[in-house]
Amino acid sequence: MPGYEAWRVGKLEDARLFFQASAEKQPDQADVWRGLGNVAWSRKDFTVALTHFSAALHLAPWNPMHWGNVGLVRRDLGEPQAAISAFRVALGLDPEYAPALNEWANVLFDVGRYAEALPLYDASLAIDSDRAVIHHNKGVCLRYLGRLPEAVCYFRAALILDPGYHYSLEELQRLGET
Image 1 (tube, one colour):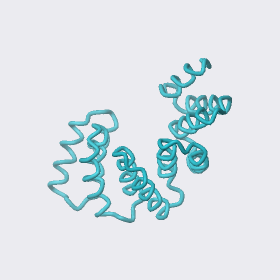
Image 2: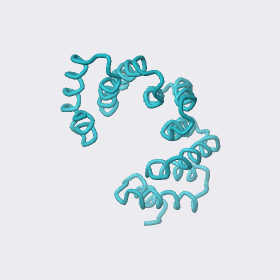
Image 3: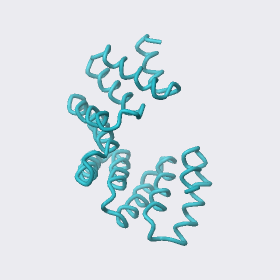
């Protein structure tokens, strides 16, 4: 969909206009509401994002991505238990849905439960080791656990996958490893 292409490259208003027009023509299409949710989320308008993601979920409750998106926005709204509940449903629908494992780990990390987050990052990486963000997130968790040499390895793994991944570059600079 052209709306997703616009969203991916940061043309948020173009994406919103595309999805809004699509929603008026096809209000029963979950992907249109997910697209509107993505745009609102990218704009950090989490209340609106939740409304749109919830509409997508209502139309396709069997899709783990919609549950994951609801979990993601609940995390951003400061509702960790609601976020975890949504990730649990996503994983109940698809135990191999790696983004839900990563985001669940992020919620645990956010509330200072680093040791509990680590196995979820591991599980996410076991399913999908091609996403720099998961390697990075595990590296940050390891850093908070005081396991600095391991953290550095995960930041470097993120950079192998995405050499310009600035979050891992910043972490390596912070650790004096650049």
